[in-house]
Length: 197
Ligand code: SF4
Ligand code: SF4
Image (cartoon, rainbow, N blue to C red; front, side, top):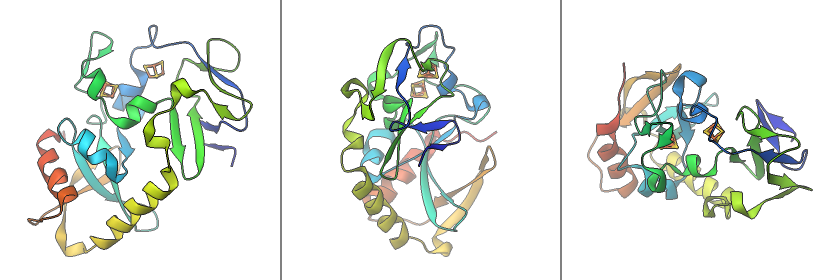
């Protein structure tokens, strides 16, 4: 697998990073297409107090779960003075970006203006990710993703979900009934952060 959109496999290229100081938060901006990021179960605890966790369906009609980073029209509400105002508590996908796991692959987003093929800090070289770009989220990622899919399959009952709107064409749903499940409870508590124009 070589690439997905602007994301390229670390096994295909040596890639470098020049820092964020010259960038106006491209990856924090829904208007640039960065609004939603898929979650794995361990992410829920980290994100629900700051961001909405929402459900959607993919092309195969599988239930999927996302953190919504903004309303799809502008910057994340935590982007201020060209910085992340919750840096230590930013979403797991933000901590990894421009690196992103994809099934068993590790990808790097060449849409990040700082990613390039020859200058700056090494992101990946000779098919290996620089440990400075590594987070625990990548550890056993395939197993974590499978556990997340199994959880989503277990709650996939159409009658429990209600449509709440869309962002960048992505239909969004909430779990509409009380539940003892802690992931559903975190999802429901997180909805106070949802902003739909
Ligand atoms: S990671 Fe890339 S897109 Fe995001 S702020 Fe830094 S330079 Fe910009
Ligand atoms: S949490 Fe921080 S890094 Fe993540 S999108 Fe918001 S401002 Fe950007």
